[in-house]
Image (cartoon, rainbow, N blue to C red; front, top):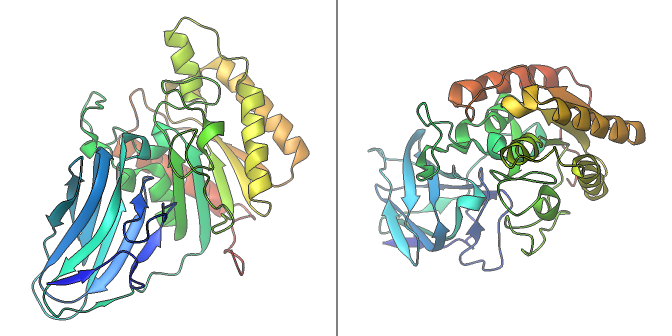
Length: 337
């Protein structure tokens, strides 16, 4: 048996990862990736300290299986490896969202004497970072007719409109999304302004090093929960939405001075049809675009009554990709970014 540890230089990571323990970095946000090339006929994954539900797509040579990591201490999970000699390409993609759970990655086991190499990743043209809620996370997108939250296996960020958009544009992508989260009100306690720059979806979590990775384009989509939560509570649309959203956008601008910022709206019923939300969102757009020339906005035409399913995600990605391709700010990442 050959052990390849997480702090081995042959691993490749993408995402906002907790490297406080190099021997077992934390895999947190949906869309986090780990890659490796290896030889041999055996591959086993090691995990530790799993909280909540954690589901990954484990892909070897283009074929993937869903890996569910049991909550608790150390675990070992074998992944099928296609027969045949030569190098295999492995990628681990976190399909479930951060607020559902996170886990530490303890490396891989290979066959005795097998070698491993750093993977050769495809060149990415541009860096995108998304900030949003369940619509961005891909929540419920592989459910049937009814949304369900008990088993996050069917919440597949790999087929969310954010990931589909990034793949179509050959972009490196990060997504900081929490289901139920709003600007001023929502179904979870934490608000967007409290976690957009954190390692974990918690207001008291350590701050991420935002200098280490800077997006070319940062995209926001908030308001669905502000509208739907207050409506369910018999309350008016939250008065703090506009000011809170403007403050969030300005904070992201301070952190990412060279990025173009895009405010999105839509995907579900409130974003598409709620008049108080539309008015408040348009005021956000007016204020931030008046003060910052590198801000744009886009409204989805496609929306769904339930959380978007994969077909909805594809329709939304098609809309967004077509619009982004026409924009002059879509450019490759510059040196040192």
